[in-house]
Length: 241
Ligand SMILES: C[S@@+](CC[C@H](N)C(=O)[O-])C[C@H]1O[C@@H](n2cnc3c(N)ncnc32)[C@H](O)[C@@H]1O
Image (tube, rainbow, N blue to C red; front, top):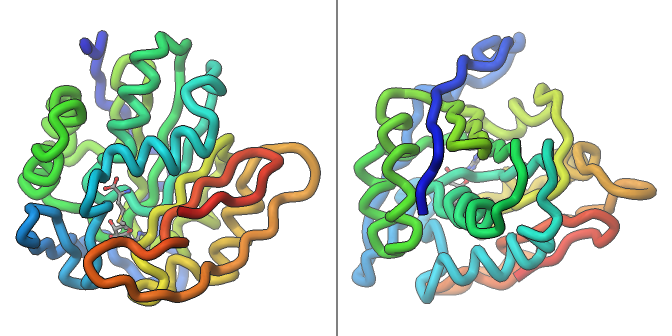
């Protein structure tokens, strides 16, 4: 698959503003370990970044099928994600966008407190040849410090900082949400009621915003527990896997 055109975009106005009392995490980076299967594991959260079985298939099932994508793509469509991690979800969405020949622009905005080093991302993505094949331009831009990149009508924006601080300042609304924090037992901050209420408020769709409640806490050893990855599609509340 060819990405027709790649350009780096200027930072959005106000990206670097700090609110009074805000905790700055922008200089914090992911500390990554690797398990026996070669899956990246966050040393900070003691949790894998994606399914130990097949992260790409899980992404497609939970987030793309769960949001009826690529069928719902249309010009101006906005995907938002909590937890950018390795960029695997973003690349799976890019692949679906390109394969469907969907009209752009489509925006993918992700909130990430602990950005990964380019080398760690590349190593993680090497497990998924399909994703690795389209990752090059994005990784080159990421390595140069770009956080807004136009990949041929698929516009990626990664907003660094704690989502509890950055999401309330985001002016956008999403047509599809990918909620991909770690296991709620390991990272309850990303599943707090206030943040989920903010997600619901920033959600397009008919009627009242869906009521999102924190998932039940479970600590699965070795694989992601059920309930730690959610997609939020219009009119449907949240679907968890
Ligand atoms: C399960 S990983 C996401 C995997 C990712 N979607 C992918 O495609 O590789 C969870 C991510 O949430 C991030 N995270 C954890 N707490 C956060 C917070 N308070 N605000 C923003 N991001 C956070 C972690 O740094 C990590 O990258």
